[in-house]
Amino acid sequence: MTDLNCPLPKAVRHLVIILGDQLDARSSALEGFDPAQDVLWMAEVAEEATHVWSAKQRIAVFLSAMRHFAQVLTAGGLPLQYTRLDDTHNGGTLALQLQQSIEQLRPVALIMTAPGDWRVLHSLRGVASEYQLPLELRGDRHFFSTVREFAEHAKGRKQLRLEYWYRELRKKHGILMDGNQPVGGQWNFDADNRESFGKQGPQNVPAPTHFAPDATTQAVIALVNTRFASHPGSLDSFAWPVTRDQALQALQAFIEQRLPLFGLYEDAMWSGEAWLYHSHLSCALNLKLLTPGEVVLAAEAAYRSGQAPLAAVEGFIRQILGWREYVRGIYWTQMPDYLQRNALDAQAELPAWYWTGDTDMACLKDAITQTLDLGYAHHIQRLMVTGLYTLLLGVKPQAVHQWYLSVYVDAVEWVELPNTLGMSQFGDGGLMASKPYVASGKYIQRMSNHCQGCRYDPAQSTGPKACPYTTLYWDFLIRHEALLKGNPRMAMQLKNLNRLDESARLAISAQARAHRQLQLPANVLQANTGLL
Ligand SMILES: Cc1cc2nc3c(=O)[nH]c(=O)nc-3n(C[C@H](O)[C@H](O)[C@H](O)COP(=O)(O)OP(=O)(O)OC[C@H]3O[C@@H](n4cnc5c(N)ncnc54)[C@H](O)[C@@H]3O)c2cc1C
Ligand code: SF4
Image 1 (cartoon, rainbow, N blue to C red):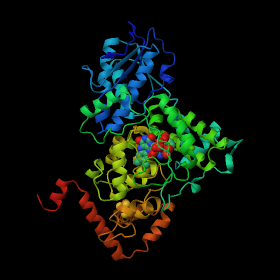
Image 2 (cartoon, rainbow, N blue to C red):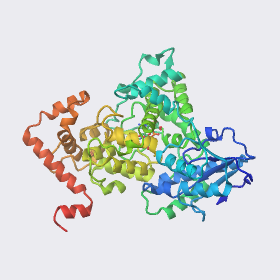
Image 3 (cartoon, rainbow, N blue to C red):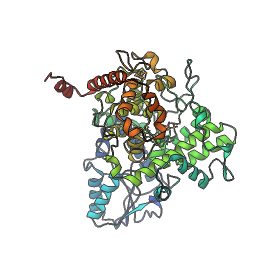
Image 4 (spheres, rainbow, N blue to C red):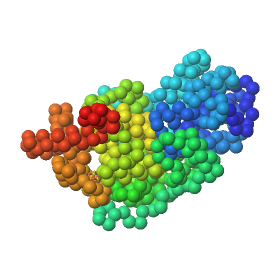
């Protein structure tokens, strides 16, 4: 066990737990901290990298940011008990490590900011009750709203919709408001924010704000490459912000360089262009290196000073003040049952190539390879490429959830699960999103250049050149027609389905079945085709 410099008090009053995604020296957990009798507690444990098969980028960003934060705490003279992954006494799980510390330090109480993960909360509560210690959970200041406020908002509503929650928060916090009216007379500028790049592709995209690994990060990279060598992805390009200073630099660069075009190209994709006009701030926000308040206020200030247009700023603020708060409310009001939901009864396995990118579908190859290399993909790549394919294929939402929780640097369950199971896979039957986000390959063709370099044709649903998205899209509508009929937002898509005659439907279903067979793991495929 490594005590980072500071001697610990002899009799410990509070053991203050700081998790890997709670890296804020001003967090609620530290309020009232007395270095003469309290101890801070942080632990790197293998469980957090293995409970899902975490990608190397995700493991490294957490470990590096934790170590940098620990350095800040100890430089400030705060007593900290920090366990490194390779410490000989490392118990391997948060629960076992905490038990060791409780036995050694005998605190009177445990304090922490509420965790972002139901599994972690459950496990730490278990330890506290085993030792009959009070565990004080404090509110997380890294959100505009509390879970209680969300529950209040949701009470009595038949349907939850982002738009109402978002407007409520805009009014309450006075963001982009002129008196009690939205700035510009509109709450929502979505219609202005759906451009593609056109034939010429993205022009003069600013270079991403990257940070060369320092000695601490290099040590983490070496550790992850050794300890988790078989985990997906690579650390060759690791350059994420891992300190508050770096996160603030990344925020400033985004506001100055990318925000003005964020809205226009929010949904657009282009082969080999990972960063585009997005902020890449989700990881810093989720690790709590930045507060959502400072990010939103910086964006609003850019609009007020004429640096960025309203449509871009509103579009960006809606992601943080709207979606980020909304998904957190859904997570904490629905867990733990939410994890098991599967409204479409999807039972297929995740194709093995999701872990390698080894597919001949150009859009998926690009999105998955980029994800494994960088730990990042933007929202439309997640929703309308990787997520859309698993939804159409009929993959179990729980398997899809595990993949998303594994591969992204910003993946923490409170935000990842509702986005994956709810928004992307419609596993909650419409609680999170008003309809399944389904589209054919033509959507990807419209929003990117992927189809130009692909062996498939998004206009074809059957035959050797049929785009799997297009085949599976019609097949999805055929399979779920009865369920979707009651949804007015699906009316147009079902009307188009009704134009297909019986033979076209049969041909599509047969092609979809054949495609599905090819995605089965090799052993199942052999058994199904009689080769075993
Ligand atoms: C299937 C799926 C899984 C996802 N998993 C995660 C996840 O594990 N962690 C995560 O932070 N986001 C997740 N998202 C939401 C979103 O895709 C990412 O926040 C975004 O792509 C991060 O890139 P960025 O910082 O460049 O975002 P930008 O496009 O620049 O957006 C700005 C910020 O808004 C917030 N934001 C945007 N969209 C959402 C959203 N739908 N829900 C919550 N916050 C949002 C993020 O904090 C983001 O940094 C997921 C979306 C989908 C469809
Ligand atoms: S043709 Fe289909 S599979 Fe190929 S890139 Fe376009 S959408 Fe993707």
